[in-house]
Image (cartoon, rainbow, N blue to C red):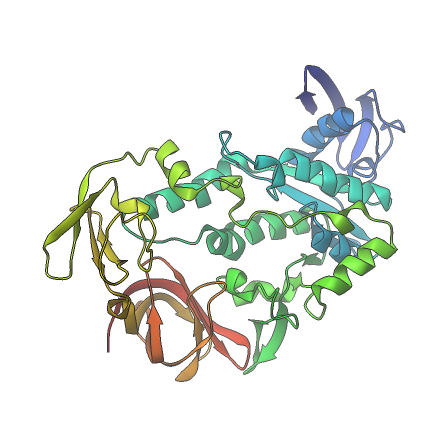
Length: 416
């Protein structure tokens, strides 16, 4: 295997000859120890000059494997404090893994993303500072096809997709669990704030103790059948406790800032990103609720139900985007009360039968009481109170006693 790395005009190259799970010969300068005779697992724990270790990681990633070992835990590492403490709690048998994912090269702040080259280096340094192995998996193109492409196409169709839900609930955990098997680890740990609970006779995702940091909404599309191999070490912790624990162990991640939510945007506005991805400005009409033209816009995909900014209209009362139509490139506007919705159709699944529950329609949105009825392609919600700005493509997560009992994507909504 050959791995290379370059940065600021410098270049490093590593050549390995591997037999099974062991390195039999190596050409690798800049590392603190020779690699010949080491297992792939042992080699992944060898530190050295940053560029040399980058090259070694690129050589090891595609072929990394290890025999199963009792107590070994694969830990998903983002370079931040949460995954660092998850690593601490996983113990001396942990092996860190970081997915390098695609980030828009034109993004203004790509270095802060949880999957950037800088984040990969920070994650690796955390592992190596504890004497633990770290593996980097390059999944940039796979991520672009599985997450970024659907995000762009969703907006083109007039939807409001949630890429983090798609990534965490599907792509990311599929890749990480597959790695855990190759690494001989019985479990995968992550730094997410969530819990796993036994509910109605099966394992289901549940809210974290720290309600302000709870990430069960973003994880809700996880197949419950995978939960037996997943561990959330921070589920019973608060963020301040996690930072204190990292600081007490002298980890640099203790002071690291939060990463961006939609990592591939790299801190940019999603509209500018969509334009770079091929959604062209195209003049269209702003219509009132009666179909009368009241203004113009430069692309339906720039608007989502509930949006007020950017309409460019002056009226006696505030106006909001009510809906968009991709076919006609029109946006319907109206007063806030016209955003109210009570009935919502969701494409997805219920994990257990439920008739009364709570639903969240946004990550930071409130949990609303709702009736629930199974349908052919998912379920229907009858909200006990109005929700404003419900948009097709949004993630709907159904909770019963703090446990995720269903999830899916909003297909349509209507007033009572």
